[in-house]
Image 1 (cartoon, rainbow, N blue to C red):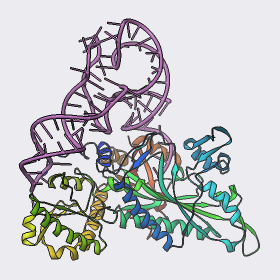
Image 2: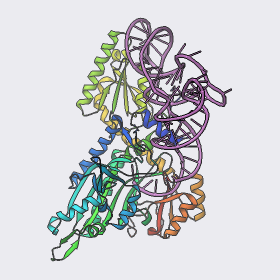
Image 3: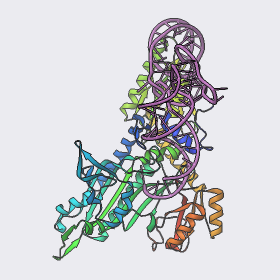
Length: 483
RNA sequence: CGGGGCGUAGCGCAGCUUGGUUAGCGCGCGUGCUUUGGGAGCACGAGGUCGCCGGUUCGAAUCCGGCCGCCCCGACCA
């Protein structure tokens, strides 16, 4: 069997395991400035697949990409009261340029509502100009006190959608639609099961009327916010004076949404699917879906084996599968097996002289650790199904883990004791008062991760909500706030 | 901002208490040979402003003062 792992045991020290696996698998490393991150090719490629999955869906739902500047005058941020209060503590400010002190400091965007709505004021005059359905891919900077690779970095990559609408209903629909897109990408692409809902007032985005969220459970049974879609009402339109003439000839403030999905989700995939051997990447985002490890001794074996490997590689690549032949001479097969497992490659093919002779290939599957011999001619045709199966298996495994760690609390004591003893997600009734929310946090270190999306709708998106539907909340230990 | 840790070769570390002449070890790296079906072995070799500034001393990685930076645990947050 396998040699002892060189990674920390995720069951004993999940945090240490996470940092080590990110580094050893070649996903990312620390940058020079505090909290910054160098995203390495293996990590960036995962992000690129996430980008594509999202961007395709944005386009399909009628959005266009554009780009706004990273720098804008500090005063712009100050126009929306809650927004400035929420963000000013973590904004990086540029005070000098060209060797001189700037007359007005510039902020590095922590998010772009301010700069975008300031510009939308010029773009929107009539209801005929609406809706604006725009998105931008960019980096942003938030001066966080505590940082972790991918999960919370001072600078991170994301997309931020910013839409403007002529009616409240249309904007709300948009916010819900994009939450749905996020859920689809989280679940179908990253194989991370998420619960959709809305945030409590305290947990809302600064300046939002409602914040819709999708929440995932990581392997330490803690929650991770996986994407948010905000219904901003008319708050930003009022702050930046974005009015339009409606079809009745009246001036009206535009209705807004914004929504974001970040490089955090690379970390989320790591924390949802990894094990003591390293990553388990969902095939949909795996930079390499199939790694072929050739095994040989002498030169004649080498050429025979590599020839067979190349043939399979070409067949797989021809079917659109991301495949790589690991023909490095400086490493032996055992090393390569371990390394590809660490890097989370879903399928590994082993081809040696014996296999070439018998026209077979050994197929090793990462998610369950299985190995089997398969006739070489069947490999190419069967691979798409294997990858689909791996994708589903990761998702289903994550669902059962989450369900095993989801509980209902029927009293305050059972909630408090349950969280302390078992952690995980807890569903319980909540009176809606901030004071009670704070008390729960103080007593248990848990936060309200989400509330039902539509309280009145008995067929609403939240399962297992108690009878008093608009008073129920999912409580998960916050990933970084739990004690 | 509190608490803890660390800064010595690409990475991980020892050396520092008790100052001393060519600053070590493991991994990695280069060359060669033997190896190759679960993280190879041997030999030779390359690689260092000991975080920065100042002080003490005949002599500082080591002692003293100051500064800077990063990581980890909380509070803030995607």
